[in-house]
Image 1 (spheres, helix red, strand yellow):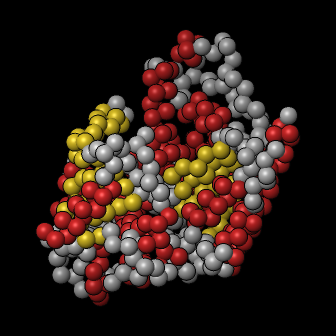
Image 2: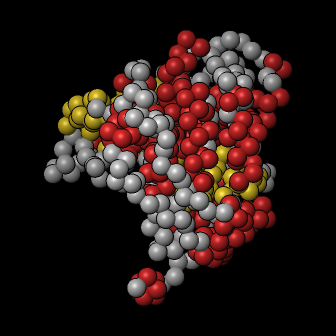
Image 3: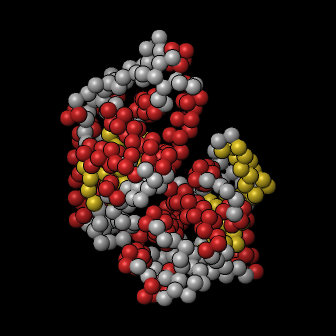
Length: 437
């Protein structure tokens, strides 16, 4: 029956076939480094097509809630020789080198017969994991055993091919969960493709109790093919015609122009703008000041001046395909929390392929600059390299003391790079409007 179903659908293109088509059409440029990665993805694709993941049997009937309350022993993971499980791929490199594009290309090439697969931004994945762990702890009760094992079991049942974008570890809670979660997922026969800005050895540097995370790093290095994609080409910086989506300064003329655009996007009389639309996020409300079913409008303070989390921004960008953010100020050192929230919001917009319109006090790339008076010679080599990679003016960034640690610099660099791409005509033309969910 399975073979008959497969035969009824045309075969999906392989990663190499997809990549060749994009080059022939002029959508992508030939790049030897990307070709090398595509060949690795092609090899993994071929292994997965022939791969038969182990069956994950249901929990024995006697392992009821009551029995689990009196036993800390989790149900055993299925036994499968490691050499029968395809090694995952851990792909790392600087912003703009095409990691996400290549991973998405691989994911789309997986045969339709593979139903248990998932592609997810790592930030969203960890939010989901924390929710599951919390629910499992409540279910097991005091002394009910390790919640990570059943969560890993559920995740493996849902997908044996997992693609993670933007893998990073900045939180002690994430670090402690990942140490166990990855080992259990891999033991269940799950195959992962991961993109990251960092080599595994550089993850969670200077983090609290990093020694407890080292076994996870060892796992990544031994059970993944770790490879870099630093070709020297930032594909987000290839010249494009910018679409007018960022408006500065905060003049009456700019405000009026953006209001006209908002009214054009919400002109359908069957889908009127409503005030204070309520979204439910983890059991608590978030109110959207003005929105139709697919378009939302916030002022900066409403979006970043409140203690909102990544989960809030992910839900907002999943719900609305177009978002307007008004009155973004120039941010100083005393507004670092707002700057971090804005970066998290931009990341969520990028991942959800959201159209973004912004009015700001200064050009959008200068909102993080403070007035500390620092000079170009005060900039670290690390900061200078990041800014050079992104093509940003050192005069704009050198005066900012807001971002200091490595993790903050990476986040800032990624945000700037993404704002460049999201301001392009190509972005405006390729992302689609989404209806209210």
